[in-house]
Image 1 (cartoon, helix red, strand yellow):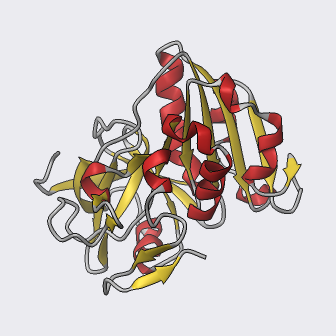
Image 2 (cartoon, helix red, strand yellow):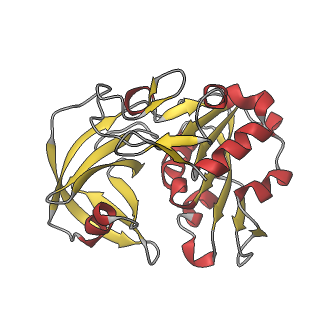
Image 3 (spheres, helix red, strand yellow):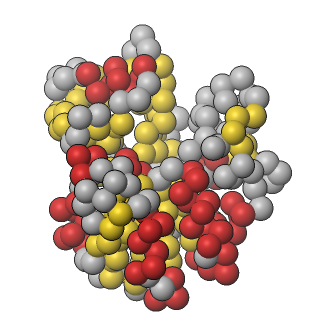
Length: 257
């Protein structure tokens, strides 16, 4: 892990959709796909962000910090700590990526790494509507793509799970998930017998990001998501709070629904 804070200069801001932007920095951070970086938006907050490329993060502007981050311009800078955490482990010769919304971003990075290593990649990606689709060309360059949208404006109508009928999990050595928590736990439960072959990148409230404060720990095992995750296998998640509740900034339980 890299704990020493550093300054990152923004090289480019690419608008992907009305509310999603990719921010490219002035250098590669050399992360493993699935790792994250703590980004300090000065005067606002420090937040964890997954990598969408070695030099990039892709941000959904939904809160004060993410909106401030997306409003920055080339030449401006942010503080950073990272890369941090444990990323995805590439296993086997044939893998499946399943992502929803902006959660597809680290999977696109993972898929490109896998393809460069000669691994066959199939992707199932879901979005709310056609206007929310990101990185479709990146996924198509990797291999077969199954696309879903909640409103049916592109691909199969329904959430990402609507595309599961097109897939046999036994065809893949490893399955990688990233997206909304309820989507991921639904897939893990459906494919319970294959849960040990599922790697999911999950989100919890990070404060210290070095495994000291305990804010991100998963009940009942006490998994410190900031250092042991954010990528955790499906069989461990089945035995945890995942998909039932999480803890907010105060440490109180919050529903995942």
